[in-house]
Image (cartoon, rainbow, N blue to C red; front, top):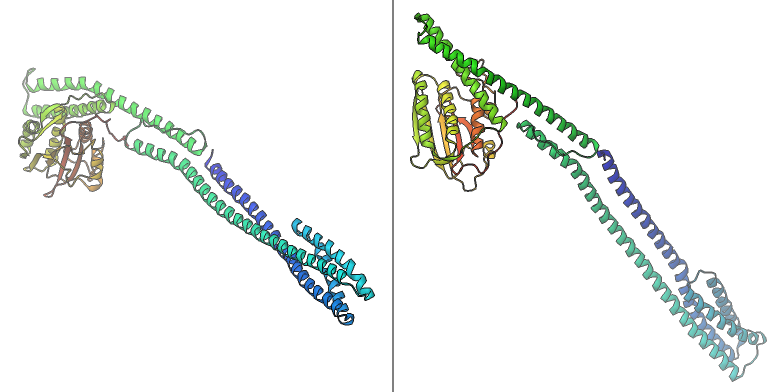
Length: 511
């Protein structure tokens, strides 16, 4: 499903919920309006009429008693007739209302009794007849029944009004509850849909971001999970296609470098051997100029041989076929051995080594030959970039806490710390130093610091890349910082117990 459809579906669900909630609340409002109208126009009118009828009945009772007891028809006959007409008119009007069933039954019973009382009283008023005690008592009994029934009508209409009020209140409560529940449900649904939509978008983007970071760091074998459909699915498929193509190109480049380097070793060895034989003057004597030219040729071939060996080492490390033999070794002894090897090169430039080692506390589990290769590369660089007569400082110490100047990028490369003791190797030179922008990139293969031209002693940019790969295989890290007197200090941090696992080589792709 595309991103647009996901968003549209989420909004449609919210619109449907809002519409259903609105329609139901509109129904409740109409119901409350109808109940209020009935309460005002019917129930209230029925109750008021019942109370009015009861009041008029008291007057009818009073006028009837005065009419027959006081024998004064002229004063009370007209008033009595007026009240009787009024009661009959009110009964006719109330019967036209849409009364509740209980109210209608009560009024019908009152109407029946009123009709009976009126049918007995009207002839007596027309004839102005005198009534005996029995007839008067019968009329009084009829009035008593009417008064009792009027009280029943009042009570019934009041009960109906109270029931209508309760029903209206219940409807209002229901409307309020439905409104609150709808709002809460809409909010929850909106949050859920928003979370689902955002999650369905951000998760693939996070995977693509992770994949991009892994590719940028040189892990060309990384692949992202391909989505079933949609724009993000297409993007993930194109990403994996790009990664496969980059991996193929990188493998072609590695194969090319490996094969060419291997094929160059044999003829280069023959050139060196031939040059050595000529310098030994086995075929015949040489002049001084000829010896100098042959010696220059031998030195250049040796440099070329060293570059080819670095290319072959790099190919083995990148291919994951480099073997490591981790055994207990003393870092101090390794440093002293490499210093002794490199010392003749330093003497050619009148440079010297100042070695500072923690005696007796530099044991570690490592591959001694590989670690010596790291030390040798660092010392070679220090000699090559230091001016003549400079003193190169070499030190090693044991650490229980990470050093204060450990960069965040270097800390992330450590396989573990968690109470582990580490050994720190330092090589400080007095060369031109490394600019801040290049301190992380100089450990990438083929990266060289440009200062207006190639510096004396610069190679092709493979030595530090090989050092980083070997150090990472030991579970450690390598970084560079400024040397306060001038130049740079290269530091290597290694776990004393050796690596818990050998991580894959980390190389940046050739730009």
